Image (cartoon, rainbow, N blue to C red):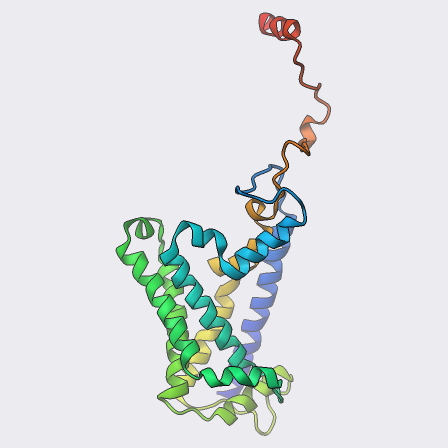
Length: 258
């Protein structure tokens, strides 16, 4: 069991890293020749980082468009952030004193995640517009995330898991010594399910809509300056074309020849 999950763990992590880097490279190489910033957009280059930061931290455009979806999504992301911080202790021998504070939240991260995900899933079922634009992968992804948050909460509070053994196994993975004397895979079924679902998410991440986490930084509607009048962008094929004229006689002559 230990050998199997060590191999699966490294394979899933490799797919995740290579897949994410490949997608980021593709985003960076994709040309954006048109000025398409979503207004109101910043008119200076210094305003672009501020706008992207407001999108990443506060989901500003989503807040303006739909408050209910914003609330559900924000709850999920806050819960996910707290859960990731809490899992920090499984990857390192010593935990910084500042992060110990988050251990006092106990089950709240899992419940917050489940609340946000449950609301997002419900909106796709009961709101006609959301149901119309939803595809099967949207439901599959939500169910996968709900299963991860649910099994994690159960493993923490209802089905006792040997936390020491879990940490020793994870420490063996991150230190590249997975077959050490203490690095054995925990035998509890709930942890096996939870860990397997996390590996599945890592494999699926680069090929799913979750890549919006990186894609938001490359979106031309977000990272462009609204200055089409101040700075004219000319496509390569139009560089040698004659400049537009405003002479009435020339325009009339051109129309007559046509």
